[in-house]
Image (cartoon, rainbow, N blue to C red; front, side, top):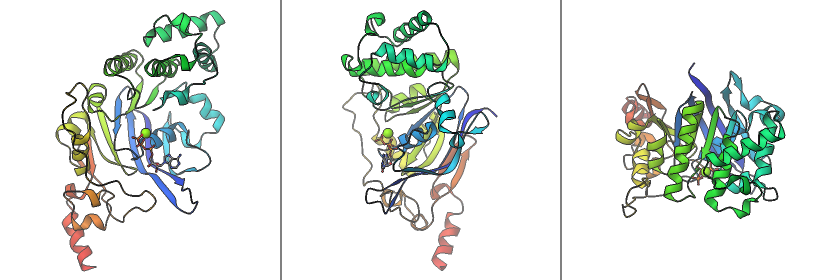
Length: 337
Ligand code: ATP
Ligand code: MG
C-alpha cells in the first residue's frame, strides 16, 4: 500500500438546533492520501470540507456531532476507534492540523514562546536549552523577524498573517507525517500567502509529509496539489489529478465551481461566475443527486436515483449520471415504475 491515510465511507451528522432533525454534513466520503502527496479539497462554503478534516483529527464538537459510520485507517489502525488518550498522542505530533482561524489554535493568555515550547515538549523529551533553540528556529523558519524577542509576545501582539505563521510553525514542530491545512493562507495577503505555501512545500520535500489542503483558491491548488477532491453537500463528487480536474472536469458542479473560484496571481478584475442557486438543506436532502436542482445538464434519472462513482481514468472518478452508461436504462426503468 502506498497510502498513509485511507478514509472509507465516512458519515458525520449534527443534531439540529431544534433537536429533531439531523444535519448530514458528511455523507459517505472516501479517499486515500498517498505518502508524500498533496491532496486539495475544494467545494463551496458548507460542503463539508472542515467537518471532514476535523473528523480525521477527532476534533468535532462533542455536544452535537456524531461520526455515524466509516473508518479512517492510519498505520493499519482505525483512528475512529482510538481512545481519546491514544488520539491525543497522535494529534499534533504525527497528524497536525492548521485551522481556518488561527486564533482557535492559540491560547490568548500564554506567550507564543511558551506555547511552542509546550507543544514540542508534549511529544518528545528535550532539554530546556534545546527546546528553546528549536522553538526559535521554527519561528525563524516561518519568517518571523527577531524570533527570540517575539517568543515573549502574546498572540494579540501579532498581526493576522504573523499569527498564522506561528500556527504553522506549531503544526510543523513535530515533523508530522500528515498535515491537514484548512485554508491556511486565506486571511493573508498574496505575497505572504506565496511565502507560506513555499514553506509548506519545502517542509514536504524535506520530511515527506503528506498534506491535505482545503482551499477556495485555484492558484493554491495548482501550486501545491497533485490531486483534487471536489465536495458538494457532504459528498465527494469528483476526484482526479490536478490536470484532470482543471482541463477535463466531468461533473457539472466541478465545472461551475472552477468558473466561480479565484485564481492566484490572476488579475482581480477577472469575472467570477457564481453557480446559480444554493446547496440543498443538509437536514432535508432530495432523493436523487444532491446537485440536480442546480444542474444545467440535469436528466430525469437524477431526481430519482443518487449517482454512483464512475471511473473516467485510473486516477479520475466522478459521481454523475452523465458519465454513467446505465443512465438511460435506469431512466427507462424508472418510467416503467
Ligand atoms: P467553508 O468553506 O465555509 O469553510 P466547509 O466546506 O468547511 O465550508 P463545514 O464547516 O465542513 O463547511 O460545514 C459543513 C456543514 O456542516 C455546514 O453547512 C453546517 O450545516 C454543518 N455544521 C458544521 N459545523 C457545525 C456545528 N458545529 N454544528 C452544527 N452544524 C454544523
Ligand atoms: Mg471550512
